[in-house]
Length: 413
Image (cartoon, rainbow, N blue to C red):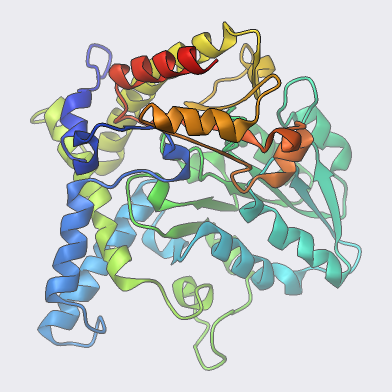
């Protein structure tokens, strides 16, 4: 259905007021812009029903309805049911709570596997369980590809493995992992899988049921929504978690309450419904009159988005690869695995911060840092250069944006 249709980038851009300015915004991996639908819902909630929700009077019921719509939109983005997700303040916070909720299941000598590639959100909280006698093993990046390889995971799995935590796509390396195959191997070892999808969800359609993950995490503020974190769990996996809320909060399978102490942010959850409205507007524009259910609408749009971003990423990747002084992280694996439009790179003999400063002077919104993936930065040896320069595209970036980036880099390098 999408074969002869291409993404109308200008139509997409019209939904984001900040794109009318002079800057080329390429720090999207750190957080995306929000479309007017999200802003409108936030304003509507704050203006008309900023009260305690669900208490039986009109403004309160309207608030609950908007919150429920937001939860439904956040669940639909990953093909989950609303009662299978927890909306929390951030992915870091959600993992921290989840680690405490699973801790009673773990005995001294039980093992957890983490990586040295992941953002610290899906890393640090698990490593802290070593204080309880849990053995923490590290799935290390392959030196030849800068990436996580399944054959390097195999020797770490054994009958004491209880949980493996890894990323769908690194916010530094950018290569897409075969999550379905990795999870299948983890389950064969009798363990659960916790997958960080924060860097992946803006670029490709996610179906947590098809992936068969036990837990999946993403951040709506990196997929055109408010600053929140979403935790998905299989019902049978969530049922194993211990209540992390007040002792008097009943533990009756309401995981939004038991795994989110203090409750969700009401106005931001309500605003998240605007993500679904935005994607619906895009679908109606590209497929007018198509009478499709929401999953099919999202499938259609993400196919267009992936094709558009792949074209942009190809141009950026080809340019960077043409420069002998530039090392693109993960470039060695490019022929073997698909990547999203996230490029972290080093320039021989140059401080990464200096490159980023010059990009900003040219009107390119980019940055240099460890991007909270400090272990990954150390593994690739980028610490002496103050981390990596990172540029990242999403669907609202245009070919003109790439032209300006390449021109700026040509002058800098």
